[in-house]
Image 1 (cartoon, rainbow, N blue to C red):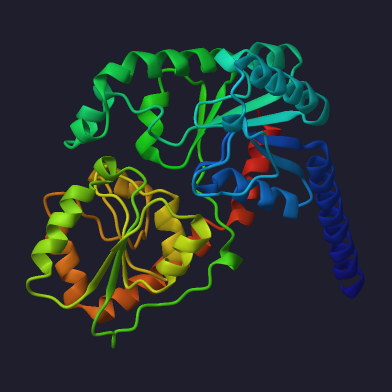
Image 2: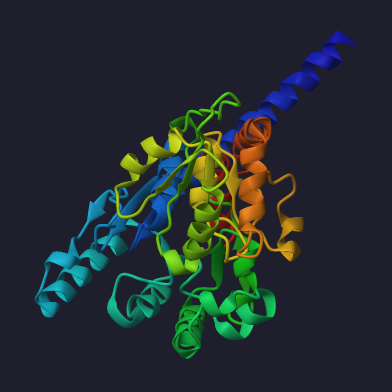
Length: 365
C-alpha cells in the first residue's frame, strides 16, 4: 500500500512540475507592451503584476498623465509642437515596439499611430492585439438612455457617430475587447466578437488599510472627481451643504493633484464618495476600499448580480443625502463596510490574480 501511495505521489509531483514548466514557457513567450496611455494607473498595475510573474511587460505613453501616473517610457508628445516631428517619433517608436513585443495591449480606444494606421500593419505581421476600454470613449446615448435615467449628464448625442465609427474601425483588426465592468458590455457587443470582463487590478501590498474609527466625532468625507458633472459632484455638494446644518464633519473636494498626494488624504478619510451617475464603480472605488474605507457609488440595480458581496453603498442624485446621513449616523457601519471592502478587493481585484487571467487571455487570442 505504501509503495502504491508513494508512486501516486511521485506521479502527481511529476504532473505538477510539468504544469509549472508549461506555465513558465508560456510566460517566456509573452512580450507585451501597454500603450498609448495610462488612465487611472491601470496599465501600470497590470504591467507590474505581469512582470512579477516573469512576463516581459512595458508601459509606454504618448503624453504624461496630469495625475503623474507611472510609465516605463513616456514620449512627451505634449512637448513636441511640430506635428511632423511628433509623427516621426511615433513611427520610430512603433517600429521599435514591433521588433520587441508580440502582444499590443491598447487602452482607451487609442493606438500609437494616428488614424489607427498601426492596426493593419500589426495584423499583417500576425501580432496579437487587445483593446482595453474604460468608459467615456464608448458610451453612446442610444444605449445609455435605455439603462440609466441620468444619461443626459453622461453622454453627448453629438459624439455618438464618432464613437461608433472608432469602435467599428478598431474591431476590424482587434477581435478581443477588455472592460472592467458589465456596465460597458452593451456598447461593445455590436462590434466585437469577444469581450472579456476583467476587474480593475491594484497591487494590494501598496494599500495598507486604515479603517475608520467609530470614535471619531468629526468624520472626514472625501470626494475626488476627475470630471465633476459626470461624477455627479453638483448633487453631492448640495447634499453636503444640507448635512452641514445638522452634522459635525469635514469635507474635502479633491481635484488636480498627483496620485500619491491624493492617497495620503484618502488614508485619513472616514467616508469616500466615488461617482453617483455612471452605474458601476471604477479604480478609485477599488483603491479606497483597499484602504479600508466605506465607499458610496451608484451601482445600477441590473448590474448588482455581477457584483456578489460588493460592500459599496449605492447612491444616486435622488438619495445621496439619505445615504450620507446613514453613514454619518452609524459609525460602526462605516467600520464594518471598510473591513468588508478590504476583503472584497483582496478577493476580486488583486493584481496578481488579474495577471494570471490576462496571461490566459493572451494565450487564447
